[in-house]
Image 1: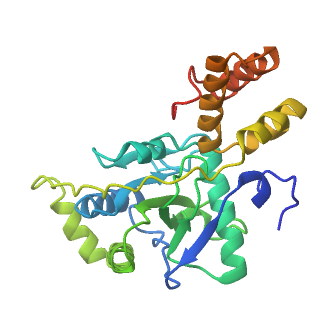
Image 2: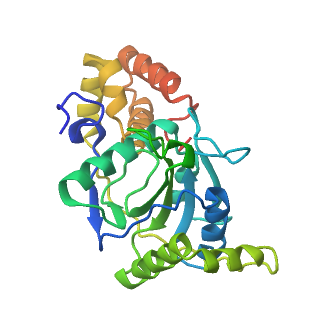
Length: 274
């Protein structure tokens, strides 16, 4: 495990990643069409209430290379609850860190089909779950450390085990039954899919660190501690500073922190999820 001051440490990232279910092989055969397979999965999952989106480190094109920078989150439901829309803003850093985290967990406890987020983590809200997919390109079969095409099917982890098992078996069938996947690919545009609405998520209490503690940490060493802030904590700070301003308690040091935070997160309002 990484040291406590590592960007991947549990303390720094505040990531609670837990596995559920059996050990399924979610690696697509090297000869299969990666982007086409993701399209089929997206098409089939749209009618499921637990499906949110698919994130991938590719965007298609000739040879469908792995992106060195950026990720694609183009396969997503049209209507998703406001609290889940943050998923659409997933960044390359989050995608890569998630990959490393799952690799670490797999080495300790073996592969699992569904990985759950028991708390808010970056662009993945509390209660979401992911199923990791990958494919090693043909021309890297002999490489010692091949570069994989990777993707994450993002689900609403609040649904029951039966729904998660349904997703697991459907995904496994598409990945390992080429005949079935090809048949589905032919009917992708034959008829519009009625998207299933995602269940309304229950409001949860604040699970981040106390705002007063966060202010002290940021004043002590902004460059280090700002990177440990979850979205939930950043939003809480925004409301905290608003309250201080309303009560006349906002001082110059708070103003300085607000400016730094807005520059770091590139947002005009800390209270918004953008």
